[in-house]
Structure formats: C-alpha cells, structure tokens
Length: 364
Image (tube, rainbow, N blue to C red; front, side):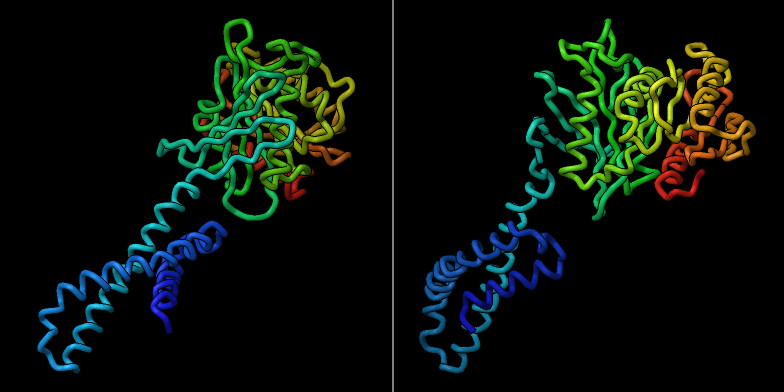
C-alpha cells in the first residue's frame, strides 16, 4: 500500500473514531484535499530532515540496523502527518458547524446568528424584511429529525422576544422537539407592542404583524421541517390581543391551538372553532379577572363547550385549570392563579401540556 493511501486511510479512521463531521459532504471533500498534502509533508520531512540528520549515523551501520532505524523514524512521521491533517480538517470545518448557512425564502430576507450566551446557547436570532422593515425573532430549532410542531410566543407591551422567551415561556425546555419562536414587536406610540386590529398600519405597512407572522411561518415550514398542521400561539397582554383579534380572525385556519394571558377577545364574530386556553390572574390590575372570565365564556360558547368543567391541573399560587369539553372537539381551558398581570413560573409548563395534548389529539 502506498504512503499516500496509508496516511489518507489513517486520517479517515482517526476522525471516524472521534465521530466528528463524517456525515457532511464538506468534511469528505476536505479529507481528500488535505490527504493530497501528505506527499509534500512527507517529502519535506522524511526526504530532507530525516535523511540529512541520520545520514552520518547510518553511514557505517549494518543494513539490518539501518532498516530498523528508518522504519521507526518513518512510523513517527506517519503519526505526525495524520495528526496534522486531522487538525487542519477540524479547524476548517468547525466554523461551518457552529455557524450554519442561512436559508432565506424567496420573498423574505432571512439571516441567522448564534446566541453566544451560556444561558440561551440553544437560541438564535433570525431576521426578516417585511415591507422594507427589518423584523426579528429569537428562535429555537430542534436538533432532531422529522417534522416539528411550531410554537410562537408573543411578548407584552414594552417587551422583546429575547426577553420574553427565556423569562416567561422557556417552551423549548418543556418541548425540545418543537420549533419555538419568540418574535419582537415594533415600536408603536413609544413602546414595542403588537397589531391590535385587522387592517392596522404599522411603520407604513398595512397588517404589518400579520405579514410578519406569514413570513416566519413560511420560513419554518419550508426551510426547517415545521409541521404546518401543528401551529400553536401563546401571547401575553399585547401579544394576546394580537392572537385574539388579528391572528384568530385572519389566520384561524392555520392555528391548531392558542393560549392567551392577560388579554381579552373583542368578538367571536367571524371566528372559527379553535382550541384555546385563557390564563388570568385573580388580582390583575391591567385586565380585570372578570373581563378575562367573560372572554373565556365567549370562547366556550363559540366552541360549543359544556357548561360545567372538570379540574385539569392544579399548582402553586392557587393555580387551578378547568377543562371544558366541546361537542365539536374544540375544548377550552380556563386557568386562574392568585396573582397580578404577570403569570407565575408554574404556568408555562401547563401551556406546553395543553399544546401537547392537542397535538396528540388527547384532549376533547
């Protein structure tokens, strides 16, 4: 077997044992590229340094001693060459793995960058351009294969996707198999918030946030194996109003289920059946508990739910979630907690539980 073949094979075996990058086409091309360098490396090292430095020592040695000495030297050179080639391959491929190339859709500019903070290492920021305005979202993409449910989390007034996700949702921790998206709203009247009504103009674009939702959904379905039949939305306060009064009205057919906290529904007129969870604080000073109870009742009437519910979950902060079954298989859950406008930390896992039960068709 030739010297080049030995080195190339040794390099491949070494890297295979480490389980690094063998599945990528770029890795394979780099192995071949750097393996071709072995002739130069060995020629320079073994042909010049070894021969020159060993010439005098070997001059008067017996042939057998010469052969043993040269074999030992050559073996050391092979090991050095293998390590050198492996190091070159790893260093050139590592950047590609840590920073995957973006996958923009045809009608939207989409850019990705990895979040480098340890607390949110699995999250990254993605950008879209909608009507000439740059929009962004903090995103979690599962590492598993197959098609993934898509969960959107819309922040409240003055918030951001990057702040809302890790602090108030952390859906990716409770549902690592789902694509999780925390978009950021635009500034309206001095603070970031969401579109409140269908047809509203923001930053010169009619239905800006509705179009932003469409752009995001298209990206995740077409580029990241998102399941278009399992799209879920959660919203708090301003984000909840956007879900209730804009998304449900115009994109209700694309939604599998919703959860809303600290917000109310303007009307059920023109809305289709939809599985929904209303989350309300008994001491909410922004949106009264009574108004949120009324919203839940309106949704239950629309979804043809039973008048009496059953306990679905309980927890800290006097949390009680009541399940109202539906004759049209679109149940409603009303979750109350003893607190103000900001729901406690035990609520997000219950939101995920609700979405998962919808996805598995185990709640009716």
